[in-house]
Length: 358
DNA sequence: TACTCGTGGAT
DNA sequence: TATCCAAGAGT
Image (tube, rainbow, N blue to C red; front, side, top):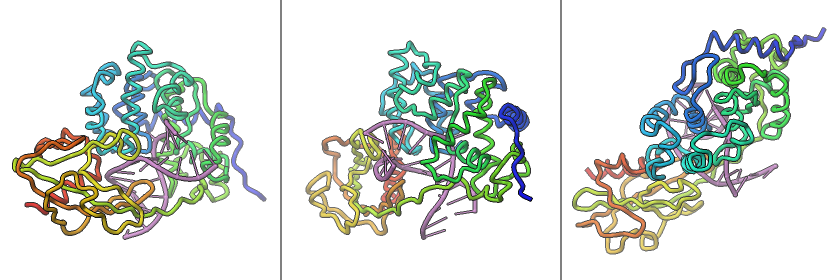
């Protein structure tokens, strides 16, 4: 005899999940009270920050952003460099650049109000399929179908979708749409993500407490933990480069603004050579920000891993009397580095260098 | 479609 | 230590 998952209607699945959510709902800074709609600005801001980023990491950033810029108009009036400074450490810096652009569009072209439909939201910079659906549902009550990593996992298991991601996305979205209710759309969207985050987890799913357990085809087959399938990832190559840590007589450090596109775009860096795969050493004279400086190689190196490559940075240190003008660069007092848009890899370089200079 | 684009925590 | 993963978007 073959065991099969129980046939449960879509409305019943949605009802069960909402009942589960009412009992287990987490209180998060950007969430409204049950059944109510949240402030679109806060929903949008949180969704951008939460892209590929954990709730725990986002928390303090969200608090600082909303405290400093309480509305989309306030954010639109800020300088990009201020936004990048507040975003420093959160990663994926194109999100911050698009966030600022998007605030400008909403303020200037929409009178400070976010579009209230999925298609309208999707026209905004940095707002893709997922975020448009999430804001439409959570801020405006639209019955949009969200498809994030959590939903992909929940639906792949519930419906036993064994096709690998990302190719399986259209099928998963269609299956998810069959269950999406028209009522309490925002609560449902957050409920299904919470289910994936706390019950239908990547490893060791807690099927015994899952409101969809009896309907889950993967659980019946004993393969829940193996889904969703994913296409294998490429191995990360290693790139190497050299950073030039320059200090003047007042203890100020030379930082340079990176070009406003690509990796760490618009962020500050300790002046560095290009990062090259397979490179061993870099000729100092080719990339030093200033000539006539005696460079001393610091012991050890700074290691950092990005999404698609490992990085090994050699750090050279030098001193000058009074900080001279250097193109595209600024002298930063050490006690004011908090005002610099320093990505984590460069914060590591500064820490490494300071540790060897004292 | 496949690649680029950060970071920190869990395993 | 190595790998995976987290409320993805842009090109």
